[in-house]
Image 1 (cartoon, rainbow, N blue to C red):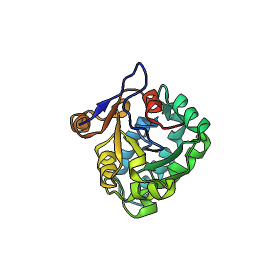
Image 2: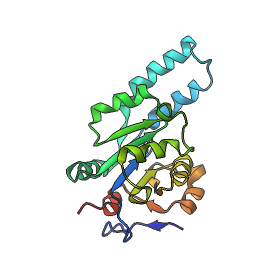
Image 3: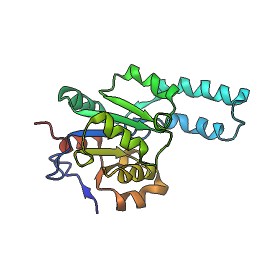
Image 4: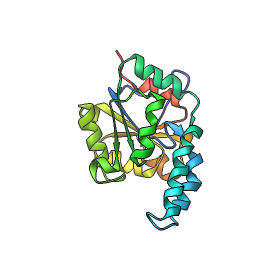
Length: 195
């Protein structure tokens, strides 16, 4: 059973979270500019010249990442209030290393290469809990895909659906199985314990 956030007050539940785990693609940023290149990458031989060229093209797309409306306010709130935050992403290191230029308020970042598994396996989320130094009951994971939900649940972490980046073919399952449904990034603020 999920809870929608009251968008008028930004309050959604009596439960507040001390730390946040964010997904990258479709949650923090609209990275859909890279989707066609990722599809091409799956169709070429690994380590071929075409494969390397596609990766060079992907590296150039980071300038096209778009921040979702309201996300800057959320990130500023997190930064100003010292909220513990980790990014858990399936993106490869060469993409995540370039994120440093966005000055995200992160304690750390976990990729599939850091733990030997990728989402939906719980290992990335369990590693994020180690970085945060928090019990799973005090952490909220925010993502936009079924793999984010399953990884979070496997680690015992509550999950909030970022509807602004959801893929239509996953919407129904996510709407039913998420603990919370967020319609805008600003609703995240009402879920954070900052006192």
